[in-house]
Image (cartoon, rainbow, N blue to C red; front, side, top):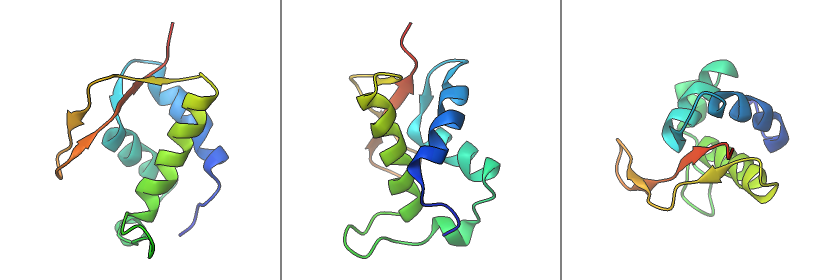
Length: 93
């Protein structure tokens, strides 16, 4: 995995959300393009959680930004294209 520093993901997330709300899967996809994360990298699964390492890294960056009150998440989650429900994030006014 080429990237494990969640802090590196925060500035591009803020930039993505500058134009409006984005669901987490779109944020993951765009960051993967920006950081040249391959499909093979994205397919790596965390041994303890069974979650994609990339998805987990982006989730931690989103959590860090929420804790710093730089972004927020809609109360209602949306159905993700690959199943389940995921958050939709935005920058508060």
